[in-house]
Length: 469
Ligand code: TRP
Image (tube, rainbow, N blue to C red; front, side, top):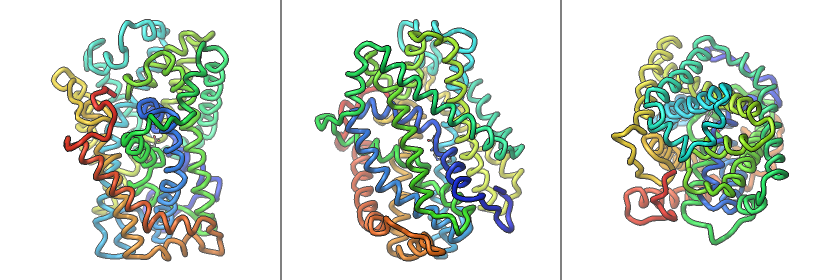
């Protein structure tokens, strides 16, 4: 795939497209975010609602975005304007979102790198034997000052920038074909170990997989919807860019079905690895964003060979985070290039200038001055604010606008015709139309109002909004 102008290089075919899109979609969203939200928002009921939202909303929106990209052959900044000149700004709205996301993604990537190095250095028992919350004390600078998380943020961000500067996406793609399946095998293996070896694990499995209607709150819906956007990489124009690289003879519907299936499957299995043990360790609810960093060292420390398995695990997670972060960063760079016809090198420098201070702010957001900063339910610190503002406010707005744009301005026909190009079948066409015209915009607007009302303290849709997460 090339990122330069001119005739667009295309993905080689169905499998090439699906794998590339899936490698960028599977990342911290599946491994880090899904499990802690599932733990926090009611276990099985969250998983059920997530699946329903993913196969209806998520599926339809992904089809729409990819079709827009393939039809126009443009990335998000120009695609909307190409379809209807007055609506170019819509592309700009979508394009702004990855800038915020990638800044905090770097910080979490840094934590993963730190966990890899610590476990590789044989410090697993220090982490699991720590009296208190190791992750929280680490990120707030209690253990080694804020300089340490800052360094790891720079290490991870640096890695991503090096990849983008050297244009090694192809190399990454090749390695990820081996490492991603390895990660999947490992997640399944650890889950199987948990089921066999951990006492009382089935209580945790029941919590995770059997929906309990009493656990249903507004937060379950809001969390699940935000997670679908985040995990499936929607509502930020990125799938539009992917679509622009897709060949006409590849079926959009089948590709989207496979991408969403892979993404959802990885999330659910990652949850199976993390949520049930966390539940029986009694850390289900209050660890929040630190769940993966807190529960997994405890699992490894009880496991035969855990000292060796832990660093391998964190290395594979690091790699999954890296592939996603690199494609996010690549998206930011191409937005900067496309917006003003800048040269790629200049766009990379601009990305550095914008993203590094934002990331530093996120790291400092856990510092002593701001430790109590916790305005939203979905996360603490500046990271929590960035996360909530993007996933629960900006993405729903971008998605609502995209749906209205399709339904009113260009009409769903434009999209369905593109999906049916070259005689391809569109089996879920009816569902797609109903989703884009009615269900998505109405439901999302409703959820957005609820979410905003909660944020401004008008009323709470969350259970126990004071939990630190
Ligand atoms: N879906 C990615 C994850 O699960 C995160 C992400 C969101 C992303 N948007 C993206 C990754 C765009 C690559 C490109 O971690």
